[in-house]
Length: 96
Image 1 (cartoon, one colour):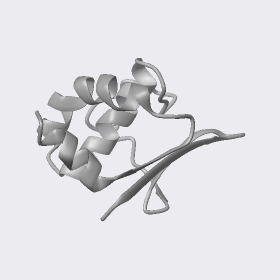
Image 2 (cartoon, helix red, strand yellow):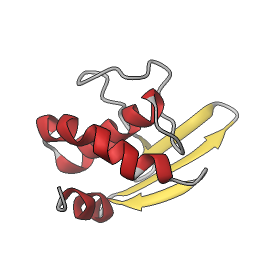
Image 3 (cartoon, one colour):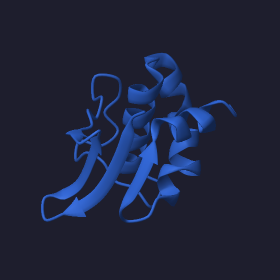
Image 4 (cartoon, helix red, strand yellow):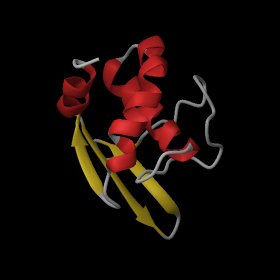
């Protein structure tokens, strides 16, 4: 099971999957050239939503289609430092 974690450092927002930096998936969409953010709705959280979904689902088209809802319902509600499992992302996706 994959573990996704996010936090802030002097270098800015950092997100990992199993301890490795999460690919922002700019190849799919470039919502935020500055990278990831969370706790609000906007381009940085949208980029994070896309990256999380694409990594967990393995279906780029579905990830893109679910990005806005995942950003609003999940990413915008994350705490300053957070941890999420791949199973939690899949459970959210199964409701869509």
